[in-house]
Length: 76
Image 1 (cartoon, rainbow, N blue to C red):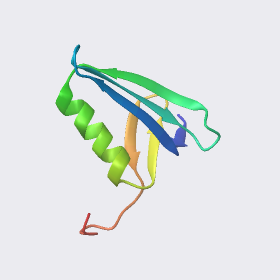
Image 2 (image 1 turned 90 degrees about the horizontal axis):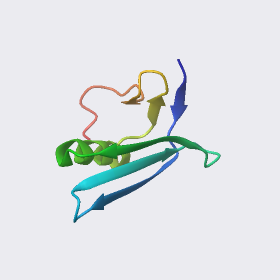
Image 3 (image 1 turned 45 degrees about the horizontal axis):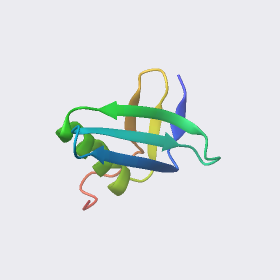
Image 4 (image 1 turned 120 degrees about the horizontal axis):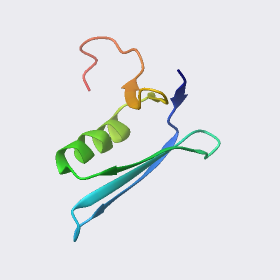
């Protein structure tokens, strides 16, 4: 199980096909994950995490995003 710090990302939403794609990159600009989305709500949630949470980690075996430890009620 590897947790990799997400340093940057690329996202796009195809307004004709109604599909999205998000690519995650590490601090060396190496691709971590390139994921396609067909659910607009799921796409929005992931983009929201990428925009507002820091640090953000990607777990390579379970394929999930997670935040770092944060205090409860931190005002975000």
